[in-house]
Image 1: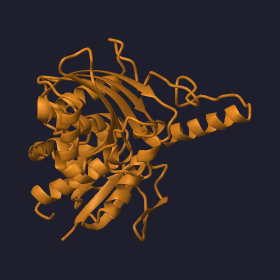
Image 2: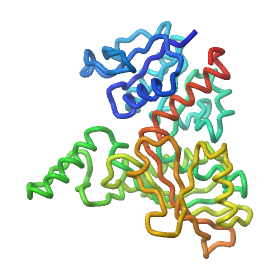
Image 3: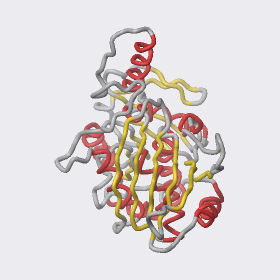
Amino acid sequence: MGFRIAVAGATGNVGREIVQVLDERRFPVDDLVALASERSAGTMISFGEHDIRVQDLAGFDFAGIDLVLSATATEVATEHMPRAAKAGAVVVDHSDAFRMEPDVPLVVPEVNGAALARFAKRRIVASPSAMATICALALKPLHDLAGLRRAVVTAMESVSGAGKPAMDELFAQTRAVYVNQPIEREEFPKQIAFNLIPHVDAFMQDGFTREEWRLQAEARKLLGPDIRMVATCVRAPVFVGHAASVVAEFEREIDEQAARRAWRGWLGGEAVGLVDHRVDEGYVTPVEVVGEDKVYVSRVRRDPTSATGLAFWCVGDNLRKGAALNVVQIAELLAQEHLGRG
């Protein structure tokens, strides 16, 4: 017997990807409901060979729904996901509405799948931000090997992390540069085409942005509360694919060869791929990971300023493992280990 599933935010970048991943991975779906804003209600989306009419999230009755996979804005999730949980559904939410709440597990199944056991109290499970997911996957094998103590992360985040209007703005500005038209800005504070913007989400009083705080806080919840991290998050003129330069310091000495063995051996190489050749093209870039389920690591080096330090580059598809795939994998683990129908 399968599940009745509702996908909230089904018309957005991540929501559409969730629907596609459910079909690709043959999740046991008896009935799929697509939910979005009133503005999108009535439009059609595809699920495998089926066309599904989108319904209004605000007016939807969640009674009888087993799982809600949510990819809405934070304020929408805050309003509607507790309502879904109260109606008896289990919610897997990709917004940042619940990530840091102590009684809501924040889960990347390969990193801390055991945390799912705590889902029952609120019936809500949070999926981390794309950048936190990518970094946690790259760091977890090394943490298991040598004990991660501190990390300095420079994150290069694609515009798809800000939604379809942001992707449209990059396209429009790029075209405008080539045809010598004025650059129009709506989604970003400065020109994004042919530029880098060291500003993702709102600024906080300490000078960090919310995205930087989010990455630091979520990494601690995923990997351990004693881990120290400082991050700089930069919006890059890339459509899909987040990347990060990471300098990590460990409790015990670790060299490049030991790190490479740890990445290759972790979970049979299913979650993290290593492409680290010290030649031209011997590394992975964002454009090459679009559609890939793994996080990839390249440019592995000893940190000459620390006896236990290591530097590397990691990259992943922010719409798949950074978002939709992780949501579906959480649902799969819930189905297998906690809901009795996997």
